[in-house]
Amino acid sequence: MTTIKWRVYEAPEGGGQAFCGEFDTVTAARAHAETEPDGLWDYQWATARAAGSCDGLQAPPEDGIEDDEAESWHGQTGRFCVVRTVYPAIEAPSVDMVSGTVGGWEPMGGTWRINGRGERDLAVVLSAISSRLAELGVDYGVDVTLYHADGRSITDDLPSDGRWLALRL
Image 1 (tube, rainbow, N blue to C red):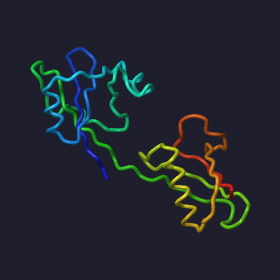
Image 2 (cartoon, rainbow, N blue to C red):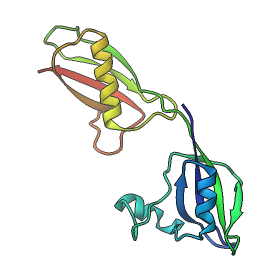
Image 3 (cartoon, rainbow, N blue to C red):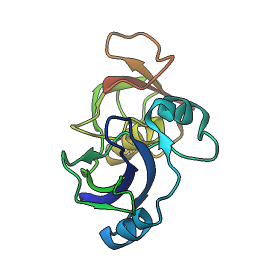
Image 4 (spheres, rainbow, N blue to C red):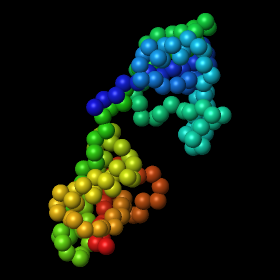
């Protein structure tokens, strides 16, 4: 299901922009923009994302798709805008089993791929693999490890596809 949210920015002419919040309704966003709230300036967003916040303020989420134009402008200065933001539905990762047999002691393995704008989250991928194994009849404990598509260990951000290996416990 696609989700629509409304972001408030301070956007003075000739300057950067400050993120002032995200709201579920356009009415709430407009009301917030009218208060001319403090925001986090764009040059601070990377720091806020890395640290969780910057001076108690959050950076805008990176996964939304914003409209090119503001929906409306607010405040006495007219520098506060409301922007529609769309969050497309997240698809579950696809999982295929390509080696091993259910019920045996040899390792089972396969591939996984995050479809479209799927969630790049380790727990989501592991859950999809567990669900696929359960569909295949695995009713015992397994230890699942993820790898890059070329077999290298994953040591940083989760790629959009890769291989998995499941060992029976």
